[in-house]
Amino acid sequence: MTDGLPIQPYANPARIRQVHRWLVDTWPPPGGHVSRLRVVLKMPKDYEGCVGVTVWNDTGGTMIWCRHDGPSSTLDTLLHEYAHVITDGAGICGGHGNKFYLKLGEIERAFHYQGGMDASKTF
Ligand SMILES: [Zn+2]
Image (tube, rainbow, N blue to C red; front, side):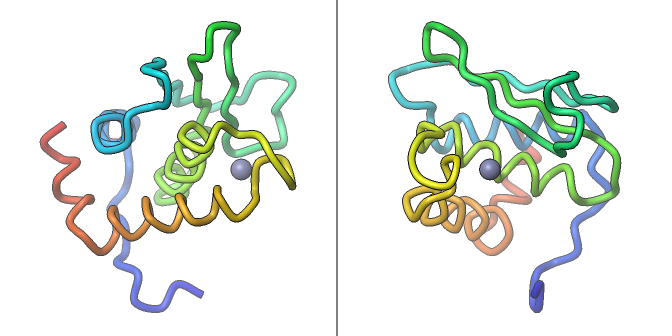
């Protein structure tokens, strides 16, 4: 159900990168690690069936891959993947436990209902 959710404007890759910078500023990655973002039309071979994935490197930094193939879904994918970045991605259900969903809820609420959509436009 998406009752009450504002309709998202078309999200081009530049806009998606802008929202990523807002996410990093609002919820810095744990341990001072770097979060990087790639917006792609085709996902890497190992993740072909996915719309998004977060990959950790050896030093604790993350790379988020987001498939850009729809008018609104890429921003939602980014919010989802960023919740993985700040909840470490580990745990039950492939990182989709209560800790993850509490953080995702916080992020979605901040973005959709508490001014994040507009605030992120300055990033
Ligand atoms: Zn996930």
